[in-house]
Image 1 (cartoon, rainbow, N blue to C red):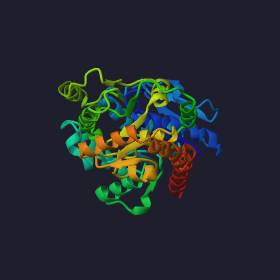
Image 2: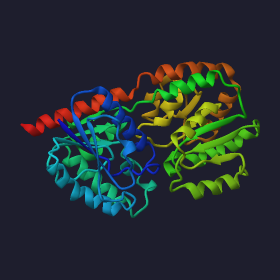
Image 3: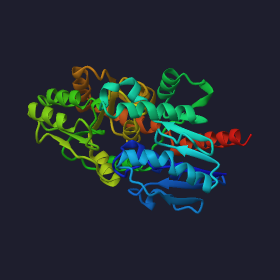
Length: 373
């Protein structure tokens, strides 16, 4: 079977967790050896390093830049279908929400979340109509949909009124590198204490409450710093104002996007990990922190609760005091930290990119069979 991969959306360093998802998924697909060929359709920003070093994978850059979204969407709807027909693609994987309307082959589209439906207030007014139209169209024109979590699957069924058999769950995985980080942490001499949050700076990540809770926490633990690692998003300037108003300049570090290797070094040194999001489609940073054996606290929302289980503290993300109390417990209770450090990797082992790839290929193979009838 010849599988097309629609990677037109990808902007290296510019799309957050969906880049980690695609790179990890393609690597895991290459290892499965199911005998398929892959054509990965990319844009002008994305280099050949996206493609696994495997003879079954072909790099197919397209003459469009994803950073100019109208051009990317236009090419996805016009140029890409022609390329799929020309290359005799049997089935197309859309790993980034959107899909061509007139596609010459069956499609499987991945929905990482339905934030635009659950929390439209977090979107810019001029972006929202496009999210609504393009994702609705992708849900309707695809043979099968994949959701990162059961919570996202339920959102798809609720908002788009789809047949339940059309929507499958393919949970994300975690790189083996994070278990190695855990081993490095075990033999490392403790440095200056900091708590780590890995998050794009968007409103739904709830970083304003995190910063205010940290201000409360620092009254009794002034030695700590807070590191927030992730792309600068819509909420960056507002968050900087909150940091200044809380008199935390110099105590809170906003890193912006950084290479994966540098981010992993932050995991190595973190005393504990916080994830206070109001909404998530999956919550990959939580899974990575668990795999690395970092004592973790996260919001008591789905799907974070199902991912972390008993391996992390959970708190009400709307309650700044509850967030601050979680910080205090992780800083002051050595026994709790040891317990969570041991529980995290065991819990994370229940998730793997190999399993994500298997479920994705199962869906692609089924969609292709349906299209061949």
